[in-house]
Length: 212
Image (tube, rainbow, N blue to C red; front, top):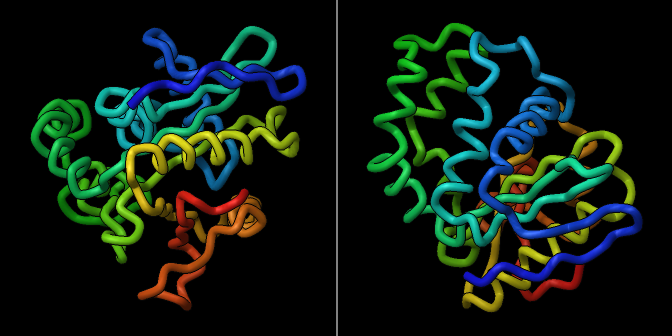
């Protein structure tokens, strides 16, 4: 998919992902990885979250990755896949072997870290319900200084346009139970529970032709 051109949001620049952004974006992923708060030191390896929720997307579908730059450095991003089933298959084939070497499976699930590690070994967790209507999924992270400025809305709007142009009808996401700020943000944009799980407020979707 073609990358959209850079655009400005106040003092911030929104642009497509560029090779070399990985380390800075991984730092953003870590600093927002604890229900929106800083996850530094929360896991044995500070790179664990990015290795599951960021880097595979940059590797597989870099054209759907958009970066927010402020004061000359990345302060946020959105990443996505157009097809969650295809993404999970490719992750298992091309990403999981290296991931397993860096982060061995914990075996039993005892701690919260074990749960995250297990997710990294089971990419099918990214395939949500109602796949035909909402085949895409996304992850978005913004540092505190980039929040509340309309940047998140700009990122989502840009991604929806890209997916719509590619013929993708809808996109979904999972949001943490403790991340109340993110839940409110997505509701404001028009994300809603999926048709088959109307009572689940933590798995949300939106049509790519929605006005946000």
